[in-house]
Length: 426
Image: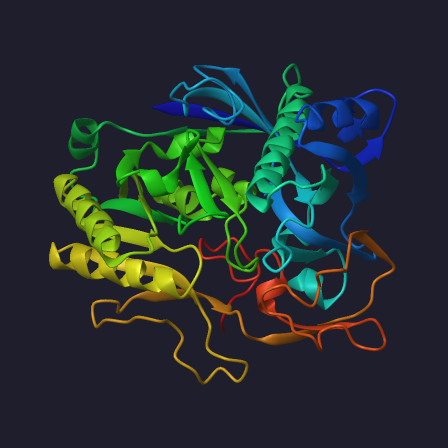
């Protein structure tokens, strides 16, 4: 399968009477964008704002972050099974607007929505302080249930991202990259001496408002399966999560998963990137056993030499992570796991809720309990009404001078478990 990705770099966003892209500037008609967002009768209002890197702006409560894309050639469209028809995607030609994002915000569940600071120490911890952000603050009609509110905002954000992406359809990309995978037989014949490596991606699926969608299907309803890695670049996986902001995968991360991109970078050089296996994170032990059994079975069927496993979330999913690791290692396949830590504010507590000797190659996204002080900023897009209730905050979070004392948990993407974050170790 061959996908040509065309990258169009956006240097600024401005509101205008007409939506268009000219000379690297995205011009957005608020009226047209609002019409797209408010196609859902469950939303009574939406307001748009722009947040640029370096500006004294705090965005909260953040729901999702989405990169606009458009399918230019090939089968299907962006976000298949949700916005576009249910076609298998991942081949042909797709354009992405780089350097910008659509950010959705709304007081859906409050306690598990995040913060993006565009400047100051908070900006150092989120990758989305570096993007030009078109922010949507969505208000639901009265009496709506949280899960209905979440769905309405999720779909509105995807619709607006597709609307913005369509503006690039006839443009010439600033840069083009080609991603191509072999069939199993072709890979063995072409790279007989290279280790066969796959990526196992664990998808958050622990229950209501802890959801991820694959071609429009709630991931809790799937059994582990194989994807071509280019499928995610067309939006085959989207976020529906209201979980801790620091380590949830917004849709932007699924579209730009760094594990996939790094494996493609080494494909044919140091390894044979065989494919991507997706599995879910379950609540009950029997379901964890079933999914980890299937994941290990698929790894064996693919005759792999090595696997990278990424997690989403913490606590209960630590068990899924370790079960996957143990069972894949038991098949004689080397594993590397990517997680983050909840080691307490002093860093002295047990980092994961589960552990095993087989998990001897571990990459961490950082300690989510680390405390930071976020200074008062000049402007808030959204509301601070829920800032003391976000996971990682407390009743003492909002200080007298307007600053916030919080754990990294509250910052969107701070300890992301695909490596799509800003922390590193020395």
